[in-house]
Figure (spheres, rainbow, N blue to C red):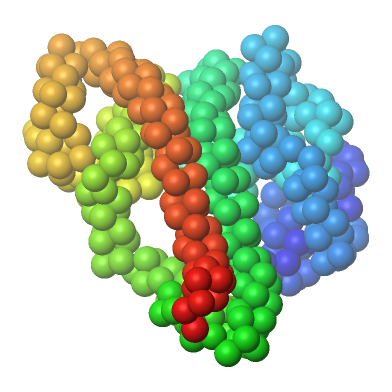
Length: 404
């Protein structure tokens, strides 16, 4: 949807500036009038400007980092008894990213005209997810917005640390795989053909392994565009299928059933569920609403179905532990802990303990997997490089032995 920058007159004749998403200039003016703002100038944001700002965001900090920093600073300002509009004005001056600054400016201007902070955030779901908006709604309604923003900031920091640990553990194996694949492609497409040409000039009969690798080399060098098209087509088809309900279910079921990574993925899914639900309940959101939000951010179809069943049971007056146990994602022990927390009225605390224990356990598993993967990847890459070397050296050895 196009974005428009505007200059307008608010209540009391105050001039305000910002951006708004709309289908047309008319729709933009209509949105502004609904907020009590009368636009004096509206211009569509240039595509070049959007690209430039997007590149600046990529070169600088990530979008998630901007949001965490914004939330942290807002919590400090609001807890210091600074008004919401003033706090947003301060954040506009402090935010280095041009696109995010436009977002905050628009949110500030809408709050100034009497719109709720929650509704203003709701138009920027690419920055603020459903968990964020739901918690802000509770904080705004209860008058504890500063404390809520502090809770959100801590929650997002914790999530970022977890993701950072996984990414850090995978960097070295990914580097090894990338370098190894590049070496294999180079040897197959450049080195091996030159050696084989000389061998064929000598009138030698090529071994089967050499013929196979030469066929692969010819395909990669002569029909590389066909290979690329096929790869893109396969990836596109798989992505389209995975977006379907059936594809999503099969993908998540397969991920959870993997022999080595399955238990780790399961721990991450349950930990995410427990930490998110604990945070939402702790912020004052009702159980039914919390489960609705959690179902949107869990990221695993099987877990989503279990959470939706749990919400239905809650609305009918039953427990939530049974559908979670039946999903197969949550172990009987954890489901039992959830049931105990539910009966004792300490579900929020119990979920937090579950999340922390699973995170600690999965961190150990990630470290061990990373340590085990590194030598395994090296061995696999060495095998392929060895096969290429054998394909090149075997004819030479036969020639040296006089076996033509």
